[in-house]
Length: 462
Image 1 (cartoon, helix red, strand yellow):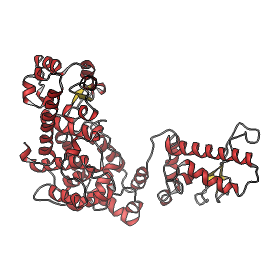
Image 2: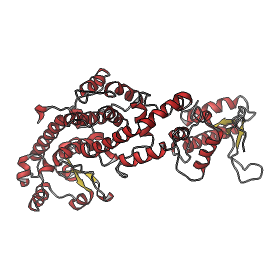
Image 3: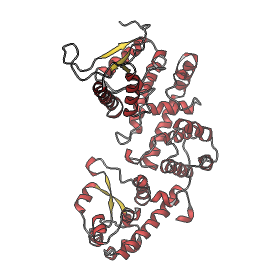
Image 4: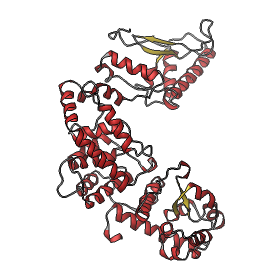
C-alpha cells in the first residue's frame, strides 16, 4: 500500500527526445515522475491544463525553445533540429491530452484530499479496471454514502425515470443539484464543504427526512416533461440547467394549476431559445431559486423571471432574428408541431425514423431552377419535420404532386402546410418563384404567430 502522506509525484517529459531510441530500448520517450520540479529540457505535463491551458502548441514550443537556447551548447544545425523536435513533441502532447481526448483526465485536487486515502484509491481502481467512467460528482456520492447509503441508488432510479428510458440525457448529478437548490444550499454540486463535517451531516439528515417529498416532486417533474413539454429527444435541449428551476418550483408548489403549467412551459421555451443558462449556469439557478423556490400563491412567477433576465440584457421575447437562427430551428419546429399535432414528432421508438428537417419545396430544385439562395431555401417557412423513412421515400418530388398524393391517401397535410389555402388545395403549390415566395412568407407568419402565442403568451397572435 502506498503511503498516503507521500509527496505528490508529477509527470515530466524531455521535450527534446524522440529522435532516437533510449538506452537501447524501443522507447523514443520516457516519462519521469518527480516530487520536485524538474528543469529544462523537462516539461511538466500538468502545465497543459494549468499554466499553458490558454496557449496553442506553437506558443508553448517557442517559449521552451527560447529558454533552451540559453542552456544548450549547439551549433546552428543542431539548434534547428532541436527546435523542430520540440515543436513536434508539444503539438503531439497537446493533441493527445487536450484535443482528441485519447485519455480521460479528472482533476482530483481540492476534492480527493478531503477524503480517506482508501476511498480515493478504490475509485482509482474502478476507473482503471474498465468500469464506468467517474466524474467529480461520483466523489461526492462516495462521501454522501457514508451518511446515507441509499442516496446513490435513489438518484440512479430517479435519473432513469426522468430520462424516459434513454431518450433524454439527464446526468447522475442532476437530482443532487435539485436537492441542493431546494434545500437552500446552492446549485454547486462539487463544493466538498457542503457534504463534509457537521454541515454535511445536517444536510444529509434533511435530505433523508424530505426524500419522500422530493421523490413525489421528481415524479411530477417527469410527468411535466413528458405530458406538457413532450420532450422525447436530447436534440432539442440546449441546457439541462434550465430544468432545475422547474423542479424547484414544483417542490415548493406541488400540483400546479393548468395556468401555471402554461407559464412553466413558456419559461422553459424561453430559457432554451434565448440561452438563459448558457453562461454561469449555477449562478443563474441560484438567482432563480430566490424567485421560484418558495410558495407562490399566484402561480408560476413568469413575470418576475422574465424581469430578471430582461434587466441583464437577455432576450425575453421572440423576435424575427430567432426565426432565422439555424441553431434554433429544431426547437422552433418542435414547438409548432406540438401545438398543431398535440404530440412531439420526436416520440418514436424506431431510432431509424427520428424526424428530419425537410424542405417542403426541394432545395436542389429551388437552387438550380429558380435561382434561390440559401436564406430563401432554408427559411423556416419552407421547413417541416418528417420521419426519416418518409423523407427518403419522398426524394425530390415537387410539392404540388407530393402533398396532393398524401391528401388523396387521407393524410392530414394541414399539420405540415399550416396555410389553409394550400392545405385544402395542395395542387396550388406550383413550382415558380411567386408561388414559392407567397407560400414561404404566409407559412412563416403562421409559425411566428404560433410561437408568439406559446412562448410569449401573446393572445393577440392567436
